Length: 504
Image 1 (cartoon, rainbow, N blue to C red):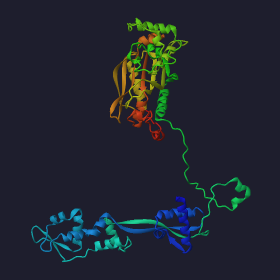
Image 2: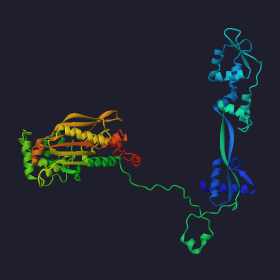
Image 3: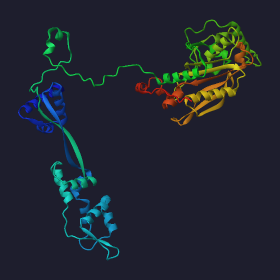
Image 4: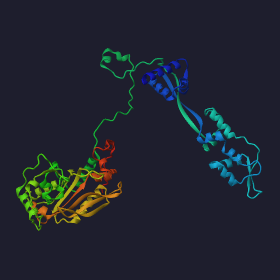
């Protein structure tokens, strides 16, 4: 329906132009009783069909009263209002006069004085403002009324226009239109323009008699649909690059399902520990148990749990193999670190210092809130060497976080079953205006390392960090559910900038 109306309008314009030499699109809009913009749109449609008409751009300037100007036209100029406030007989103090004239009283007083309507009588104390003339003519109001009635086309002198603009009584409007005249291909009807060149047109030669719609080579093409990297993946790439720059090797973390042995028992975490409760851990129903485990290592772990060893009293309970064989969704990637350290202790050629890292998903039966999810990433780091201390751990973490561009870092003593001493790591989140925990760390206990077969003088420092929370800090996200999960704004993912961590 809209295209048919546009087609009718183009024919009306052409028919009107047939009877005259030229016409202004503004006059056409008034004559047809429609919006000027629709006339311009129809004109451009005609131009797309060839040189049916010529269009010359015009600019019409007119004057329009401002809100202040309309008030002057209705109530009188500021100077006339001030004049009217002066009594016919006697006078009025200047301060009282200005107080009665409103916000433009000073301007009105200045204009009235320059017009010679008022004078200051200093022969009395205090001095009084008196009328110099009995009657005045408010030319400002008259001119603005005439301009208003004439639709902005009344003639004013250049000095008056300048003065009224300065007083913010007038504003100048520029209206653009087109002067239309017949073109070399003028016709009163439009022929349909072809948009596609077909095989039949080429085969029959029909294309030579047809008119084709011009291609707009300056038009922007539609952006192709494409995949976008999530902010987590961008930060993960930066984390990985930092670890590689610091000389770490990446651990394989492609097993989400882990045996309780590697996730808990190998890390000297007792089988009655609350973390093994179903409220904290996702256990697997099928298959419910893992495959074979290294027998000698399992016996050493059983011994240190049950009766102690390596200088430890152990936990003093009856360790159960069936409990260690339960499959679960790993609660931390430290389970992967335990497996890697066991392989390092038993490698051919003996122990060699090593640094490992991993970045992958872990799963915990958490209550969801602004900073917790049931599925999240853990950034794991492990260094095994002779004589490592807590100072080495703190220094390494400071270096790592500085490379992330995060310098507001604090450590808090904590308890972990498999590290002693242990520290929680906190970073300041400007958006939440508080310190948030971003990870845990410590020095692995001898009860964990010595059953693996590592030499007695080898220490292992380790840490597990959040990937989501540093990402929240970097991207200014205050709720983790806006970063991961069904509430994520896909536009945020699409428009999210490339992660640029302030490396030092």
